Length: 410
Image 1 (cartoon, rainbow, N blue to C red):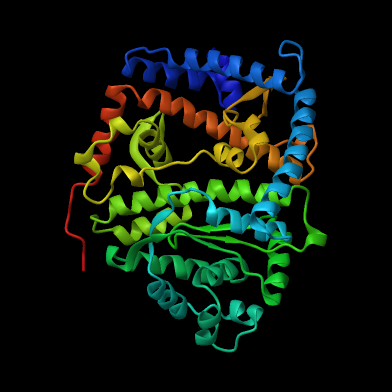
Image 2: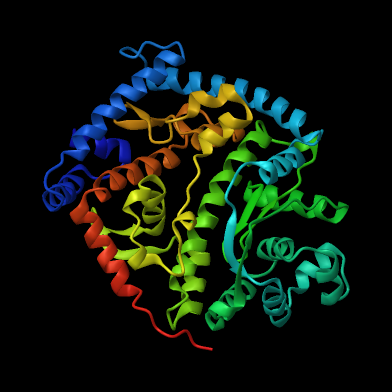
């Protein structure tokens, strides 16, 4: 069982076995790893049957091809649904419209627009002004949304400029932030069409998220130059990014009592925040804590989180369920996030993000992406252990120690 999990996760078996043994002992030997492995086998076989494959005699390449065929058909159905509900011919614009209308809790603890503009003015993005066709900073901020300016600047300014802006975050205080809805921005002007084409060509990415701004920027793509399944991939990555923005927002709300709040902001914008306590010899990602309380609301500890964080802040939406909400036939992907089939000791991921990226980039079996499925499996394993009281108590105890209330600097 340990060998199977270690191969699915792409980690060293001996090291994994040792770390898992410690976790099993600390949690009272619940055999969570064995239970998870058995569930993975049953669920993967069920999905193989749904694809019309033999669950006992299917190779990795056969599954990969079936997933690509399924994803292509689902993309066509989803695009029709997006256009029908949004009344938009441009599929990327339809994605942005759909995201704004989905039943999501999208509140975020985000930098005030006035503060964000002030930081930009101090680190004047001259290349951005030139690319967007503005002669003055004031004219640019008058006509462009601040998150869109950040998106352009992050793509065209130098690394030295990036560092200067991010370092300025260290001086931020909790009073510079406010609670508001996550902004979903889709710039479409002619200037943006040209700039977006360059960004997508260089980064091969249509979605830019800004945790500190509580904003998602979806770049425009000309219909004549869209990669395969561009709309579906954009929607999936956007929904994933919204989860990350919400999780970072909760972490910042929780840390607003810390005197080094600005440094926390700087860190959150560059990397996934973690809790000092460890599981499987690694710091616990904050996303795990967020997802745990989203799944097990009864475990919420008001003493630790309130008054700054409420149970509703600890939300996490299922990307697959939301896709099913838009187009019911995509229900096939529900529950596949952490599923994989081993082929020559390597995983073939059923995760829809991996499927989308494999299809959009037209990757062959040998070059396939599986990292999102592996990360999802890693998180699922940690969640299985975190639900055991003594493990949760250790993690939350460490978190509470890090967050001893202190007066915020003013």
